[in-house]
Amino acid sequence: MFPPLYAILDPDAARSPLVSLAAALADSGVRLMQLRDKRSGAGKLYAQAKELVALLATRGVRLIVNDRPDVAAIAGAGGVHVGQEDLPVEEARQVCAPGLWVGVSTHNLEQLRRAAATSADYIAVGPIFPTVTKENPDPVVGLDFIRAARALTPKPLVAIGGITLESAAEVFRAGADSVAVIHDLMTAPDPATRARAYLDVAANALPRSR
Image (cartoon, rainbow, N blue to C red; front, top):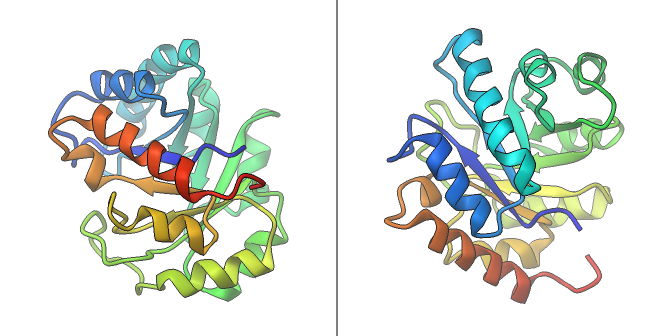
């Protein structure tokens, strides 16, 4: 089963050091995280990824590095996530060792169809709702896009963009296998408690067969 909560660790949004935040989320049951740092150079990104890998590997958590397959491979991370302007999926996979996941973002059905034809391990869809974590967000696609995507591919779908604890259930019911959350986790007074609440929502909303 694909992890139902995809926690995105963003130093620009986090209120505590990423390592302590990641440890708390792992202890709460989160099994998939992404390091998303749009501002740091390769050296700092590598150092962050290496530290997080050392922490999370023993806890059974897969760490994905955003944008940079080279950093993901060198740091020993569990995969890379690429956007529409990054390396294509197959080229990113050439950089990553066997066993590493490659995920890809999509924002319309044409991109979704292309992604479904690749070897991508999962496909992100969104933004589902308005989001505050991207400077120039793509147009909001809404729940209908998840439903359309679900009909086009059996690959795991990760919904992203403005998802909150209150909206997560309807996102799962629309066909998402997982919800990627940044702001609602990073800014929560107790991120671990919030993560457990998301996992509870997933347990109740996801079909048993998915």
